[in-house]
Image (tube, each protein chain N blue to C red):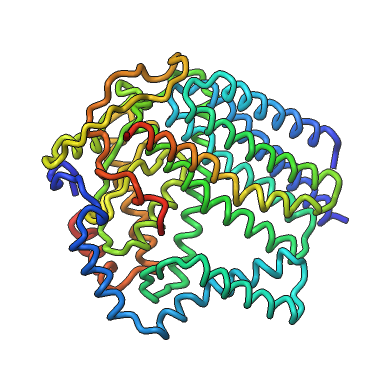
Length: 211
Length: 88
Length: 157
């Protein structure tokens, strides 16, 4: 999984209308209305809970008005439905969250001590990571998770090719760069095990077998 | 809980805020200023939380919620303005 | 009560950790050489610091409504912080604010250089005010815009 043999990266969906048009057409024909309602339901419930929390109580009137406001918000500020696979493995979700908390804690203190350490600041790198997934949702989650773990920031994302470009802190050797790349892929594998589709899961297994 | 814990926390948050303020004043680029002002805002949220623990109330929570959910808008707008300006 | 005193000690510990991470973020903001390194130093350790402060509040209050509000607060912070960090990093990379000599490898630059169909001539002017201690305003290669068009690719949807 070396990025040096990547195809040259230059375009995104917005500059290639044919690809994005066909993708959206496929999406509309595949997802039914009922599936969309199910996809919207977690968002609606979250908004109702937020409404109740902001009011400080959960009376029936609150829940009713919360639902009305939530429906109004999702209608007026419409977002295109995310392509969620619908699969959810609770155990691997917990594994992902536990690893995530541990990663954030360890890396936060590492960066904090690097800031306080009087040594000169280590060099950084911009790394291209070719992801295994084909899902925008998994890619976004991976980008958010890696952004929240200190030491890496997403500089650029190539959605068509599923390549994320990270600015990685504290990479003094080439081995550090490879470690960072592996880290991104490991986090992606955890996310796919938790919520990814069957296709992505197969791709992850294949990649781990060859790694 | 002993008093000196809160004094130490207050001093640390004050130092963090002053360091952020220094970076806002010195720059050198507008992005540095935005990063520093983001950090100043997060420090303020932390200070609001520490004050609530000290005085034992929860009245500042809505303010913290609003600050946490809108703090990013400023830097997004500025970053977009910067990249727009460098593009055209 | 023993439980209360243990919770009090934990609360104090979490508050101190939050304050420590804030100070470390401030020192990083002061010391680190370029904007993106400062971004590394500030945003992420600060989120953990905020999480520690929120934990301290949760330990003191111990009410469901308060804890729910704290969870929402943390979720908002965790969703929005990467957005602003990414926007700043992207603007910084394109504006040439990262000092090139501070990078070990730059695979995005390689990808941009390898891209053939690229010739929009935008003049990247770094947004330095007085140009000290940051990247020198060298002329960035024109191809520093791998997405081709900036309008509408980021904020919509």
